[in-house]
Image 1 (tube, one colour):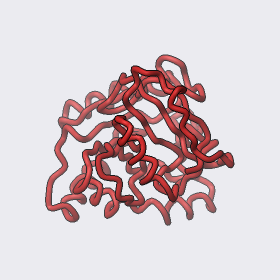
Image 2: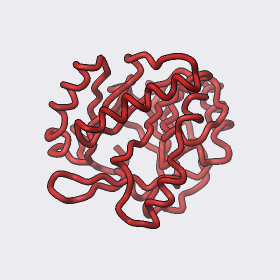
Image 3: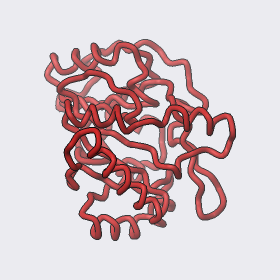
Length: 237
């Protein structure tokens, strides 16, 4: 498995918010996320060094003495971990050594990794890039309904939607209803998280109140990005 970095921090998003964790960040992504902001700027993926300008990376070799002894939670993130050919064996190895494992994915590829907690972030239409070549790649690969539905049948999971504006909620509702076609089960509201789009504290503050209001209205969970609140968009955090 090719990775870019590994580091100890806290989980900043979703169900395991605040949990001390050891992050393993893979290189490469099959999407090219980019959002339009109200000030006419655009925000690309918060880790462009794994997607837009992906670094080559190096082979994963875990030195367990690097992991603080009180950390029992491994987060495999990216980029997009499911494009790595040996994700299954890496997850299995961590779990056999007594760790709980979260895999953060955009949900576009299904990999059989029983026992892992799947943190799935389906990308909405507001994530589509401006650049034509990148748009084609993003549109071609952003097919998440069937793979994500498979994870919902085989793994514990959460659905974490990056919301750029209030109008995105209509698509969130359409997407969650669509999973019913594949799974025959409605997605429980307590598995759905709304997270404000942005890579700065100011961008979060601009969107967080309206997002909390939506969570209250629809019974979804709100998640901040706690690591950015603490450290900013700092690499290795």
